[in-house]
Image 1: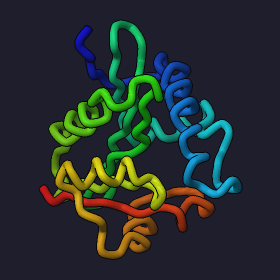
Image 2: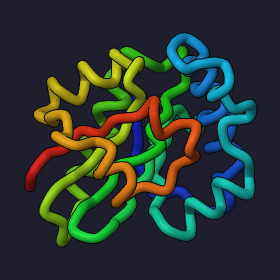
Image 3: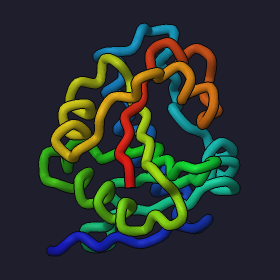
Length: 162
């Protein structure tokens, strides 16, 4: 069955949270235990994020298997909160979502994607997709993101000029 991507709304919240909170267990492999949140995202946090960005999801049949967000800040489009169910990883779903959002970007001079320093899988994929590490990720994180302080030092950013 071919994957279908569509914008997510409030009715998709619980399914999206299930994807996010299941996929985020991966963070235990590279984040310090004090930075691992369980759950990774609550319903209130999801709705707060939905107020400032657009959620998108990929469905296989009627099952949501991946989510990602698109937020505009200043001159940039931020691709955020990319999560794929573990059993659906390595099937191109993350690339499909990223590529979909790249075609949706309007009016920005660059795309920025944040990830964790220890998430070497994501970093390799971003580099293969033409993203380069930001020269000053601390500045980018402080300027464009509102992330918890405990995650700031574990994070970095990648960019692609449009």
